Length: 344
Image 1 (cartoon, rainbow, N blue to C red):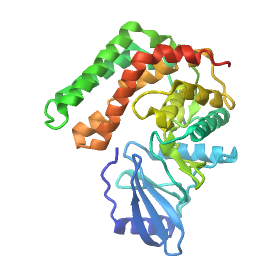
Image 2 (image 1 turned 120 degrees about the vertical axis):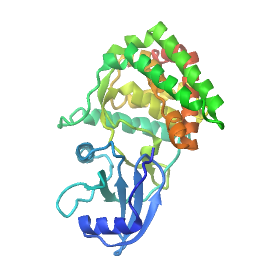
Image 3 (image 1 turned 180 degrees about the vertical axis):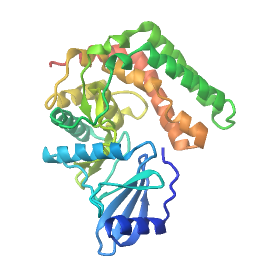
Image 4 (image 1 turned 60 degrees about the vertical axis):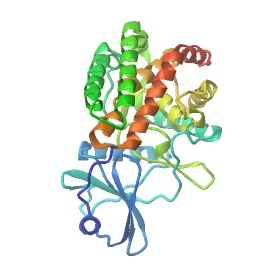
């Protein structure tokens, strides 16, 4: 969710001149993502992106992203290029927020649920290449993943408490409160079923590796032919169950997933393409729908933002994710059995 910025066009011009020695001719806001992003054109006509991160992202986190993209560039991947400040640093701070500047990348972006089969398989390919490359990542600056905690009752209990808190807020909302309460109660019911059933607790042997952390179609810049030109935004890079990144990235790009449902045969194709570049085990295939389900169920993202700030777009996003949960509750076993037929 975007945080309020204290930048104005005048202060951006002042800060960019001070930190980069660049005089600005024009500034335009770019909508999308969780950071405040500006397209800048210098007096000389060069184009840049200025990105003001949310306050939760420290300079240390930004340095990790820089390490990751520099490493991946050496591996041949097309990633963003940072502009160094005059003092040699990769970022500066403005009102306690970290700010960076990158070279502008000409290209097109796409929204969720817009990819055709070719674009879907290209997404799987690059995810596999990234995960495989990061196995040789030399820095110890990524967060680690405790897979047993990832699949514990504690996750469910904490999530149920968060959902109950939001129900109290939703009761005061006259516009969408009733539908939100229905969704949140459904999610609590599903969480309790997951806790009682316990199937997801067997997912302790799924593959945990370093990965992008937020890999999806919104992080791709495409060329005019609809091919991925650059992959952006590695600020969340870290260790996680790879099937989470696979399931989520498939879910977001396939145009057949728009109503919350999966095209299971497309998911199989996605995984087979990924497997050409990086490995999975049988537990990955078995537990993929359960790992994705428990994570989406546990999240209050979308509802929380709407109830606190009135962001209707994020409410719709939360509702989409609840429909995904409903679909996976009905079909996780079917998906799991189908994925286990994949030859690895």
